[in-house]
Length: 212
Length: 212
Image (tube, rainbow over all chains, first blue to last red; front, side):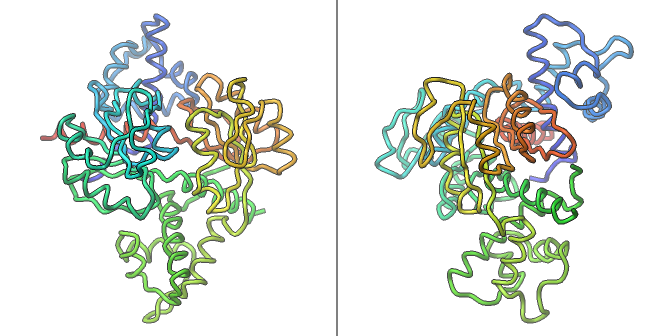
């Protein structure tokens, strides 16, 4: 599946805007300007207008945006006007943290299963879930129509887990292992290696030092 | 601190290449071609050559790269020819998972402290660490010369935590909260919101569906 032309940074900021708008709705606020959104989330108002412009005209000049309309529109763009069922494979500390991560459920991502191969972990409760054996993975994917799989196993096991998920019909993978995974063209893959995030920082810190 | 011209995707792949090269060194392999690296990590050999070309000439045509030299060079580029001390603020499930995340130490990131405001969490052991009260944060940063701070607190507390870290001399922040943080120009900020990662997937899945 080809990457879209919308920059990922824009998608990421839309996600942030939508959280801010949700708060405004709670606070009973009906209209908002790009400047107010910008101030609320800490980016420039030009950036807000540019990001929203990717998706057509929303606001009325001098009046601003209808908060509820803008919120609904952004949530629809992000695919969050529905819920998504998610499975996690790998019930180590990271997988366990993700299984009970409040932020997922708040945004419509339901973790419907977490699997592991370790006998020590199978059967352990995690919030409303219980760690299941790997043998349950395909059945859970079919039964719950799971479209998103999260991989939190060691690098050596990651490709095998991805293959099983894809074969069972998962259409997108969030990969937390350091392994570069191969998936068919019709599957969306996103890599989140937590060490890599620190390495982007150390790269930038070092580059800055070298220029001193 | 301005973002560098090297694409972040390249930095991310360098990180992956370096892991593969470390494995080759362990296996006693002395030279490697771009095609072999490419196959090992699952990208094209043209991509490998392009990524390495950002940093000058490495290989010898027809012979390939000296594995140890290439590894050392990439590690130096990434700023991983030294260790970095890291503090984490927020000892919830995610902060706790990060505090004992093996991948950090393997790459030279030493978590030297984890702080929280909750009396329930303070004093809890986490690997070699013990959760400390917030009052210890500045002292720990000074004493251990901490240059990287990880923020795993709820959105409402994130800016205050970032401000304390920056005031104490932290030069870069990895932010796991959904809050967009404001930091001075000389501080490097990288946001890792785990829900946002899923939202990039749901955005792409939905976009694909809309085109059917």
